Length: 334
Ligand code: NDP
Image (cartoon, rainbow, N blue to C red):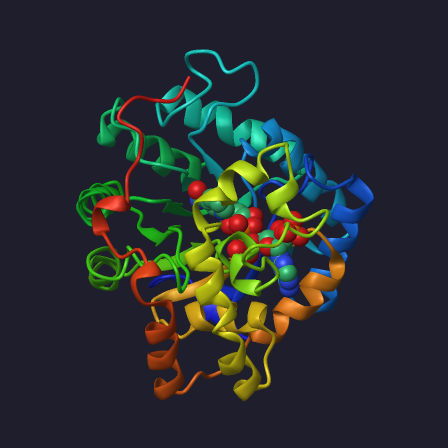
């Protein structure tokens, strides 16, 4: 497993991170969740991504329990704050000073840890002054509760302003966490160039387009039993945007390219995002330990330019590239 630096910081993270959205505390039983974490550790993954809002706190608890016997210094733990948590009252959401201060304490208690390595603003909060948010993050860092700070799905302009204020407050934003895959390339025109300028990396989510780029969903056929597209607790809904006949048909045409490289399609999808040097890590999910073992083999793979161009041709107009698709809710969600 290869490591990359996170932004301009001195922190090294594994280029494949295990993320537990939709799975831990929800789609999969706790014993399977623990097996997935163990499979990640066995494969050399030391970086893990979660959030307070995943399964309303249960995902952090499951991850913390699964990692409790590990040496803390050998792990890099990422979590996030913004989406509603707990009883979801008016101050259990967003990026106010109150919610950030209470949010980090809640996350640390569920994880059973004294600090997280990366604390991320899960979206931009249009209803809190950015100065207030950045000052609260600065104080979390000074209290030793988070070592580094990042954001998620911020636009280029928001990254610039956030970084300017962070520097004024005596720290730096090191990362942005956007959706990025061969089917969703909205960060390439604005967010990536701004991030390079600002010393920030991308830590990218859904590199497999939630499993679609693994090729297991065939056009005109029912989704495999137990897959995200059959998960009534939320997965079916979130994956639906990629489940058109056109997308599924084009994805099947990537199979010969994967074969040529001696890769599974899942590995090709993960390796694809890692070709972008501004990407520090691919946040990969898994509902079974065998998937983790398969996916980690994408680390270190180089895809020749000619095959990258063929991937573009195959996916054609199915690829989303509009920078305006990087958005945070205008109002904090209730
Ligand atoms: P992926 O695109 O990696 O999809 C993972 C899912 O695909 C798995 O849960 C599994 O679902 C399926 N899968 C995984 N490996 C294989 C394989 N080898 N063959 C076939 N199917 C496979 O990413 P996610 O959408 O899970 O997101 C990854 C992480 O990104 C999250 O856990 C979270 O940490 C982060 N994230 C952040 C967001 C943000 O707003 N900042 C939003 C969303 C995610 P199944 O078996 O059920 O079909």
